[in-house]
Amino acid sequence: IVRDDVRFIGLNKPPGHLFRLYPRLYRIFRELKPAIVHSRNLAALEVTVPAWAAGVRVRIHGEHGRDVGDLDGSNRMYQWVRRLYNPFVSRFIALSRDLEEYLTGRVGISAGKVTQIYNGVDAERFHPAVSPAPIPGCPFQRPDHWLVGTVGRMQTVKDQTLLARAFIRALQLAPALRTRLRLVMVGDGPLRNEAQALLDAAGVADLAWLPGERHDVADVLRGLYCFVLPSLA
Image (cartoon, rainbow, N blue to C red; front, side):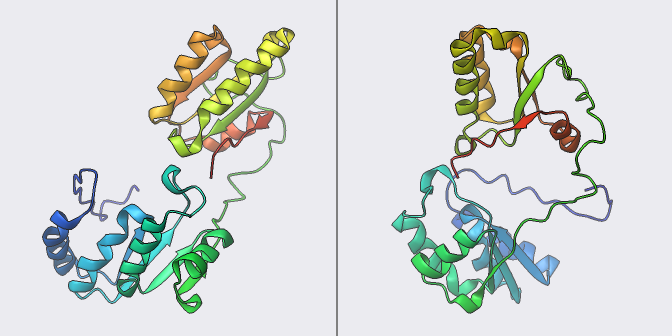
């Protein structure tokens, strides 16, 4: 966000429920008088209560994806929490049909209150390369190297360590691959250090590139021969 008329308010929220922040959120909503409050995923669902109390008329809650604590949606407590807050939500937005069916089926929210909308992709930014181009800053270059990689926040549910282990196993099964096969893992988070440690311990760290967070994802993707999504959900 580059506009200078957009205001950010940091709550510095510790892990756990938002109860202690309700008075502050109520005051913020009363001051800002927003037309819409949009919460996203279970961790932010409770913000709908102070928004309702402050008179915000439209309260939208988005369900973007599953987390490691409830990969298949079977956690009854999470279902109960969503039912509890349902009266304070004007509309649920589900990213996938699976999440839509979870909300209307297991949770029991009225189908008329749930809208399913897929993520959009900017086809002008994310398009195939006319000719292969190197990834800026990457130590490996096509066509000398065959790059396999992934892009994403490096959290447990994304399971990038699985890809690191698969890369190590591939080199063990076919040592000749060491001359060409290279691993690219873009993103930051707790699993970045774990993946790096696995590669270090296997003695293949020089065959992998973990640059952390990048803002040129389209260029990174165009530089790969193969993209892998190891995510658990």
